[in-house]
Length: 78
Image (spheres, rainbow, N blue to C red):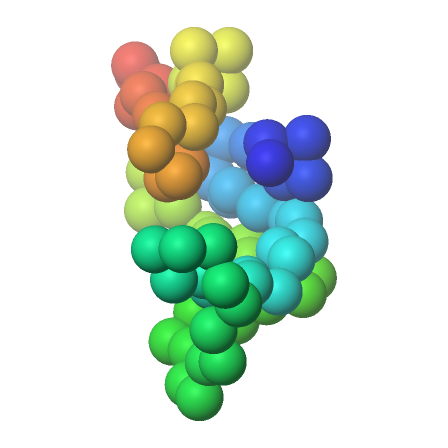
């Protein structure tokens, strides 16, 4: 849910914070399945990335599509 994600964008840094619920996989009939291993973690998360170039913070945007978060960080023009 996008309301559970916080983005902070500085000219040379991007921070993403949020929380992810424990997934409850179901079979084609809606019955719960047991998971033995999961590649992606759940719970609270926070990542900060140092950007290699300065971005134009005013033109930055983010969009959630198909379960993925798309972040557009246009470079700042000199």
